[in-house]
Image (cartoon, rainbow, N blue to C red):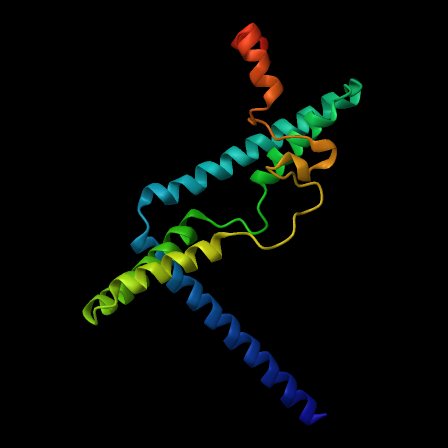
Length: 184
């Protein structure tokens, strides 16, 4: 029984130390972010939170209104464009402005430091070209599309539905024949 009690106390002490270390790291990170990020960006996050609350309240009232009115039938292209709009705004891991600016500031500092070193050893052009190629590779998406996600290329979508803003031959022909007002 003594051994179990001793083990429990040691485990509890470890958890307490870990929590204290996490709190100190978070406090240090917040201090660094407050130092590096201008007040304007910090205030943006607060305004966004207030807007989200207002949007959520509006959605709740719209849901209540839908209970009384039957939904209108929609064409498949409208549904597809709405899905693409919603999915374009929804992110898997939304980052705060503060985190985003600090992260990219650190990346820029590291890159500029390495670029300076490579300039000293006269390989600046090589470093720049390789950096550009790596940036291109990192920024291209290699994961498969999510279910319901619409491709910019209409041939890859169900029923060849195009996204909003795509200039199709039929639309172009209508504009030439009947004027720009003929297109919805």
